[in-house]
Amino acid sequence: MTTSLREAWTTLPSRLRLLEPVPFSEAHWSVLERLRADFNDREAHTQLPLAIARFRDEAAKEIFECARRFDEVVTVNVDERWEARVAAGTEGGAGDPMAPWVRLYNEDVDAMMELLVPPARYRKEHYAYGRFVFPEPHGLHTDHSLEDPAAGGEPICIARIETLGTHYVDGDYRALDAATQGMLKALRYWTPAPEGEPEQVFEALLKRGTLKTIPVNHVMLMVAGNASDDAQVTQHISARPPEGGLHSAFFQRQYRLAEGRRRGAGS
Image (tube, rainbow, N blue to C red):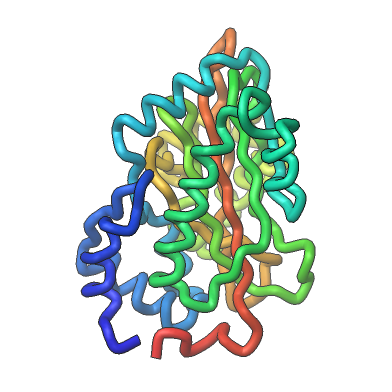
């Protein structure tokens, strides 16, 4: 690209309808430029997740109001038949009022990824909305690329709207002491550890700062993959709703890296 990444980012807002790109610090620009040159730069991975955009205020309010109309969680997988189902009314229109927002999210996130990770190509997506009542957090996990067992790290963008957040492991988890790694393993399967029951371990790691919280109403760039040696995939865990549940919406869009363009894409 003849235009630098930083210059291109300043012109991006005029192309977006749902999201507003966030300003980056010099440290964040360094990470993004390294990822653009080689997305599987493992040292850069340790600085993720990173907020790349925020939802416009009015849009976030409308998405939240849409989610509040449902007392059960509606989960939709976006595949090659999704648009046809939307057009037929089985998903979309009165059947899925979130679909128009998802379309805008997809268009805007694709535009951002075109700049940040040029080799990125859409792989899969799902979204969910309604009143989340599951009494325990979704155990600490990573998002895998099961379609390609040999895949390294791949880009994934997630967003939570208004209320229910997501927590993640900060920094390089492989460099943590054995006891902390044991606590994280216990959270993965939501089982007791020597330090206590899962709820106690969860609270302790949050208080310690090993687990940090992704801000709501932001799009976060994370890493999915299959735990290859050159990639540190983002480990994360969904927040636990309070008693009685909590309304929220969740968007997740994952990308693969085009063959032959995994390295040097930004040169």
